[in-house]
Every structure is written in structure tokens, then in C-alpha cells.
Length: 112
Length: 112
Image (cartoon, rainbow over all chains, first blue to last red; front, side, top):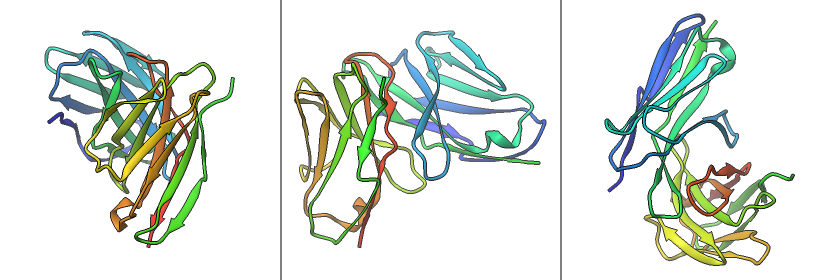
């Protein structure tokens, strides 16, 4: 059974601090996606990581992918309150027409 | 270019009833995937439709069924509703293959 695990599940951090969210997955895949979800809202795409060693940055967020370790990270730099949301990673399963399997989510609260 | 739309936005049903949720894919996309997101959980893959046929299914019982129409829009039908079916139902559209999925705003289903 495919498993996608994130940690931590809950993260409370002060503004200005740095932190990393981890996403581990149990199947071979070279495609990983990060999404953001605000309460009661749908999923907003943040990053698409398509190969081993891929690194992408947007503002205070940076995502990376290590397909050999089956690990992706989402690094937050100098957090601000607007980053408070739930973050999900999702793995695309090969040879399945691109079915996505999501992690458990990390609920981030940035405290002013 | 129009995004992914879903209807209705909210729905309340009674246990044992049947429900139909609708999704219009983003212009140019030929694949629709459906996900169930229970409160506090990550989205769970239900099934995917491509060329009007089911192209993969997650761990959901047969009372969850779907359709895709020639214009690539899709329906999700759930029979014999159970309390545990209460969730946010998300559809996502994409091109067929290893491409990013774009999510609609979701339908919030409450079963009483």
C-alpha cells in the first residue's frame, strides 16, 4: 500500500523563524507536488518537482526532491503570518495515468 | 481560460440517500480525478476518468461511481449514503499523463 507521510502534523512558529516540513513516500516516483490549503478552501498549487535533485523557490518557500531517499522538503524562511495554512505533498504514481496520493498534511500557524 | 468548477458548493443529505456531484474541467483538459477529503485529513483518491472511461480507482466501494462526458465534464455519484461520506469532494482536471492537476473549489457534503 502506498504511503505518503508528512511531519510534523502541526507546526506553530514565530514570525521570522525558519523551519522545514518533510514528506516521505513509499513508492517509486519522480514527480512530487506541494499544495497549500486555507480553511474551507480548495488546494492551491505551490510547486511541481519533476526529477531527482529538483529545487524550486517562490518567495519564502523552497521545495526540494530526493527521489532516491523518497523524500521531499518544504523549507520556510523568515515566516510571516500569511503563510499560516495547511500544506500537503502529493506523489504521482507511475503508470496510473497520474493518480495523486496525498500526505497527511502539515497545519502551520505563524504567530506574530 | 476558465478554471475547474464544481456544483453544488454545499449539500446536505440523509443517510441512505443518493447524491450526484458535478465538475467542469479546465479548458483543454481531458482527464478528471475525484478526491474525498474528510475533515482534518489529506485528500483521498477516489477514481480518475479519461476518454469517458474509469482509468484507475482508489480504495472506495462500488457505491461510488462516476461518469465523464464528451466535453470532459464529470459526475460523481454516491449511493446509499453513510455518515462517514461527509467530506469535501474535490475534482481535479489535467491532461492525461504526468501533468499537474488543477483543483476545483470543492463540494461540501454533509450526511445526517
